[in-house]
Image (cartoon, rainbow, N blue to C red; front, side):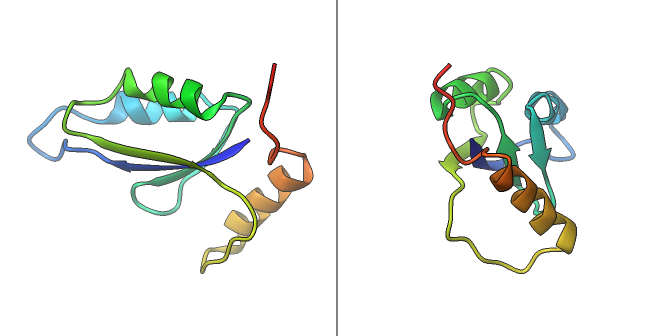
Length: 99
């Protein structure tokens, strides 16, 4: 399944680094990150499993929205972003894992 993971971290120059949260996202099967605060994550996890995994690395003031990424979609992105999306859709990543 592909999810759009939208983040707003409360940690800036004066707070602790959000790196552990970003590292956890990058542990996913595949991910794409070109837009600030937005990640596309390809994972066999359910939305609730992904949410629980990421929340372990969040500060209480952070914000998180995870939504399934599905067709139709549109936007203005670099070609490699569209390639990433197309490859995962072609590989069947649009169906949720029930394992």
